Length: 166
Image 1 (cartoon, helix red, strand yellow):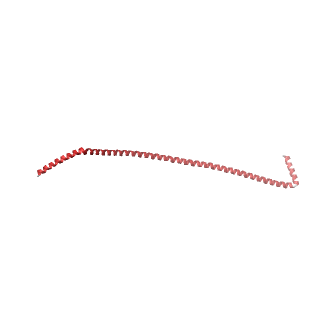
Image 2 (tube, helix red, strand yellow):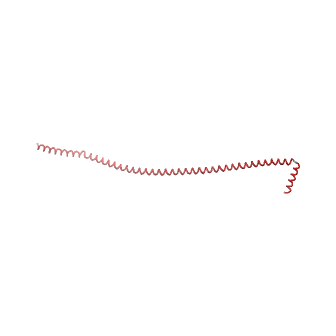
Image 3 (cartoon, one colour):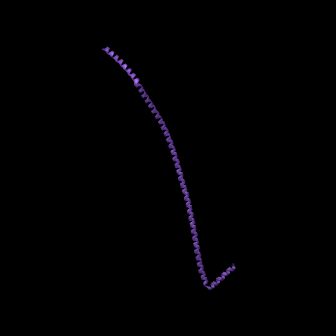
């Protein structure tokens, strides 16, 4: 039985070898190329994905650099706008102060002119009142002087004497 087993094992081995070789030939003819093609396609897909990832990384770096550049430009523009706004504010305040000063000076001059006009009117009124009072006093004095005939004659003589001396 041992011999039989040995022959059976050897025969089984040969058949297994034949079947294995046949299976390899069948696989080579029908499955090997599709499997290799699938592996190559997968490899190409992985390479393409890696290249796309690298390109995306570079693009992201470019976008980041561009966004930083835009951010710097925006900050510079903001600073320029703020500076311009401050200058405009200072100009407006300065112009308002100057205009207020001019208006104030104008109002002061008008007030001084009004005061001067009222002062002149008051002086003229006082002069008129003094003149009226002087005339009234002179009138009363003359009436009193002229009421007495002796005094009238003496006043005429005095006046004539004053005229001759001049």
